[in-house]
Length: 308
Image 1: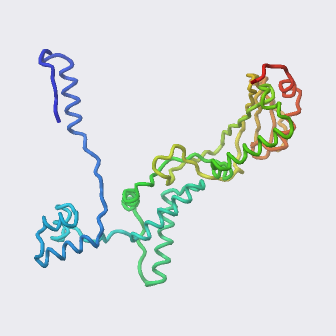
Image 2: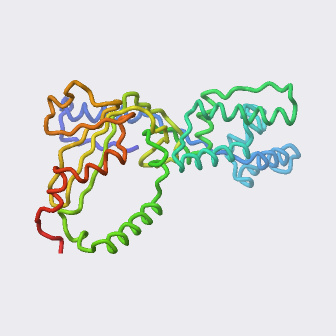
Image 3: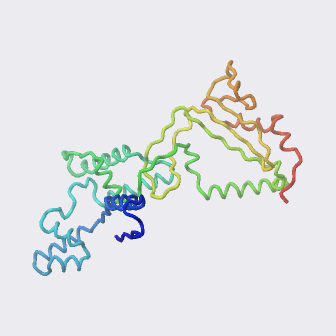
């Protein structure tokens, strides 16, 4: 590390203090350790060559491309050649990591508790086939940390709950949907796509009464992490709709009620619309009749400049 100080500054100048403080904090900051997994077979071969006096420790470390300190610790018995505190072997861990990654791609992220239960099930299946009397060791937090360290493609992330239909959406499904949509529009009325007052975008936002955001296993580098949940939980849904011409409909609020309430829920929001459903989510019985309301239809037939 090189520190450059301006000698023209007086010793009591505040920049000297700030620079000294930054240098001290940078010196105290520890670099994150990087753990590398070494093939046990290579270590065994290196130890065998050393014990048979065919190679020195330095020669074996250079020949088998192993760190000198690691090979020395294995040689004197300070560290075991094969880690004995690993609950699963290498093949089992690889299959578990691949399975977790495949579940994540379909929107089913697993929490740390789920991983522990999965590992216990794997150990139970192994012990039943080998030795039924073998005691099963429950994975600890240290084991989970080591598992993520040995599989850097996985990480623990806070998920966003969404329905299974939403979590299962893929780019191919998007392309297929829009391709079919354009074909349908061209067959019905090709002028629709050139009339901004006839093109609307609607988006709903749900406010859950019992939000659950837990950490799940996801691929490292994922921008958004979703977790598929049941769509039966109650919530309040707000539906907003805007046309390409800049006109918008009044927002629609959907409450989780069996029937319309006697109390005026829109007392402080008179320009909004109110609907009810069993779980507060939007349904076809609510959405499609809204397209024929006097509030929406005039916007669609109003004159506005075309796109072309």
